Length: 116
Image (cartoon, rainbow, N blue to C red; front, top):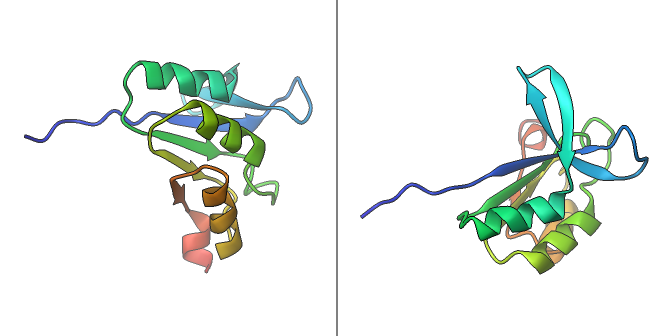
C-alpha cells in the first residue's frame, strides 16, 4: 500500500549576523526572512523524527554566483542516513559531480534547467 512520505525542505542563506556562516531561514508571509538555526543540527532532528528524505536549498548561491556550501553538505551527509537532495547555484555538470562526491544523493536544479 502506498503511504505519504515526509520530505522536509531546509532553506539555507548567508547569515546577516555572522559573516561567512550559513543558517536556516524561514519566511513570514513570503516577505520577512527569519534566521532559525543551524542546518546540520536541524537535519539530525528531522532524521530522528523519521523523515523519509531531506532537501537543502541554498537560496543565495545563484544570486551570489557561487556554489552551494560543500562543508555543510559534507557534514550533513556524515550525520544523517537518509536520502539527501541539494539545490541552489548548480550550473554545470562539474557542480553535479562535486555535490554527489561530497555526500548528496540527488541534485536539484532550477534556473540552469532553463538556461542550459
